[in-house]
Image 1 (cartoon, one colour):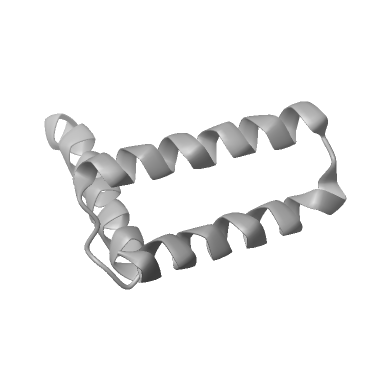
Image 2: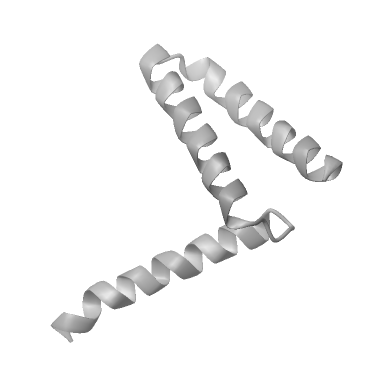
Length: 74
């Protein structure tokens, strides 16, 4: 059991990632996923550095809209 624990956790993580990608309503090629993740991470780091809680919702709303526009233009 102890040996399988790490692999099982990894599998759950992968399944969660697949579900998250599917929730975007499209199948996105891996390079675009990496680029999106980098963009989100950079945005999160900026939010943390600025520590402006009232803008967090607007940040995520802007990112969400940008993704929708990007996917619509494809």
